[in-house]
Structure formats: C-alpha cells, structure tokens
Length: 328
View (cartoon, rainbow, N blue to C red):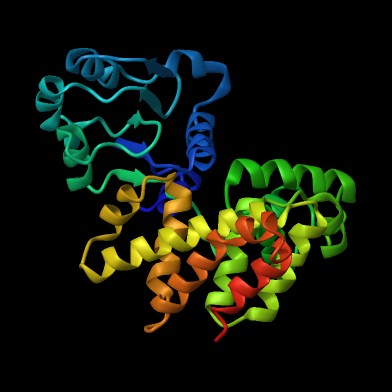
C-alpha cells in the first residue's frame, strides 16, 4: 500500500483492520501515525488508543476486540513486531480485525521482509512503506506544508527549495519553518527568501553537481558547485564527497547490469537508505557508454588532494578538471 493512499484513507476516515507502517522516511511516518491518532475524539482518546511496546498474540487480539468507548474508532498501536510464534497465531486473525478497530504495527526503519507478520500484511495489501521522497515528491510535500500554513509557495520555488535543502522531510520541515517565519504570516515564500534563509545540505548539493554534469548539464552543475563554495565548502572536501558518490554509482551500475533488483542494490551499497536510493536512480538513469568517463572522473577526484599538497595544481582547478572529464 502506497503511503499516499494511507494518508488519503486517513482523510476519508476509512481506515480499519491491520496495517504495518515501516520504512526509512521517519518524519512522514510519524506524521501518519499522529494523524491517525487525531481521528480518535480527544475527550475519549485515552480510553480508545492502546499503545503496546511489545505484546503476544493474545494481548493484541484482546485489545482489538475491545469495543470503542463513546467513539467510532479504536486504535491499537504495537511498537514491536511479534515473534514468529505469535505471528503464526495472528496470521489468521489479521483479516478478521473488527471494522471499528485499526491495528497498527509501527516499525522504525524498514521491516525485515522475511518475517511472517510482514509477509502476512503484505499479502493483505496492508504494508505501508515510507520510502525517502524523490525531489518532485519533496517539492509537492513542501507546497502542501505551505498550503496548510496559509503561505504561498510556487512550484518552481518549491523545487528550488529542495535543490538547496534536500529531500529529508525532517530537515525540510525545519528549513520551511525558518523560511515561513522570515516571510511572515500569510506571505509568499519567494526564491529570494529561500536563498537568504535556507541552509544548503552539502551532501545533497554535491549529488546535484555530479548528476548535472553526468547528464550533460555542465553549466548547471558548475553553478551548484559555485554555490556551495560561496557557503564555505572546501574543494578537497567536495572532491572527496563527489568521488565517493561516483564510486557508488559505478558499483550500483555494475549491479544493475548483473540484473540485481532495486532492493538488493540499495541494501548492498552499505550507506543510508536515502543516499542509496539516490545513487541507484543516478546509476539507472546513466546513459550507455558513460561508465568509462565516470571511472576517469572518480580517479581524478581521488588525486585532487595530492595535486594540492604537492603544489602541482590548486584543488579547485583539479576538481573542475575532474568534473570536465564527464563533459567530454
């Protein structure tokens, strides 16, 4: 089940039965749970929301079978996935959770797909995966935040916002609150305000530099590079970060060519999920024949610090020359 469908069901007050909420985008996942809890009438919420840190099958079933008290919905939140023995006992019960009850298994990170309870909920279409947002989804999310707060944020300015702050929703929310406060109640959050207030996410902008140059948008890539330099980033640090990303893209590309699945590649890169998803997408979108150019670029980026330290080239010049290898 797509997390957007889950939010839609919350808005329509049509949730009932069992669900698994898991995935790497913790901020959006927490927001989904908070909105779900808010469906229960505040004056009787304490009596209709059960929070189980860990529970066996019998305790979960008993909580679900309890009728709501002066409310339309009873919510049972289980913060730990049941052991296999309890999962076996619950498997047949999951489709029979009473319609007035929402049973939510809430998991930090992505749940292990080999677990029986995870397989059972996936089979029911009740596994809600909160993956890191794409840039376009992050921009749409920002605009919804602006609408909810009574602020104006254009589509283009939302995209610019994301190009600076990245796609992590917790960070985006913090930067959005700063920009909204600077703009003032009900005022437009413009590109000028975003440029002045929003802190650049160096890791994200470095992604953008390599993505742009690799895709042939050299002018845009070098503009992003100059932006992080103005913010105080050092050429050697930038070269190291871009070089790391280049090597990961090459690794992901080789795995794609070996017909590995997206999940296998993301989990095998050895970096955080959000970072790994971006690496995978860059590798997937890389044009045929670009592998050798990226290999040359990665090698040249490794040499930037040595060239600076031995006096053979300035770090900035060596960094730019390395990136220009992709433009050839």
